[in-house]
Length: 102
Image (cartoon, rainbow, N blue to C red; front, side):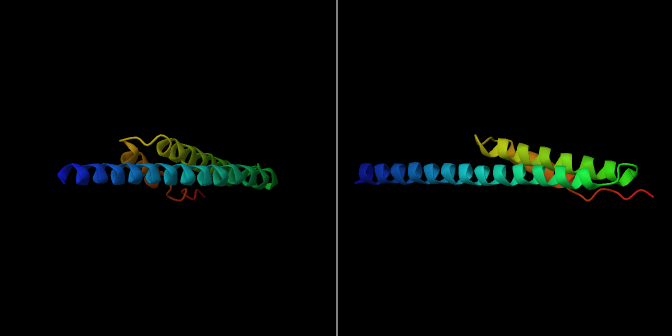
């Protein structure tokens, strides 16, 4: 009876891993669509801004950093990596609002 339980436990474990993997891939695909939409919208916003102001440069840097963080998040989800926790913690630290220089 323990062999049957072990086989069932193994199949449940494999099923859970498979579901988890596909959920991560779905999340990564959704994030990719969001990152691409953000990139397009950022280019439109930045094209309309006044490039004589310093604030425009800071906005461009902030948006570029958000794009890089989004891409790195996608890279941590597919394939899953053991070091994704520290990467996401660092990304959260980077997402602080940009300082206002006057």
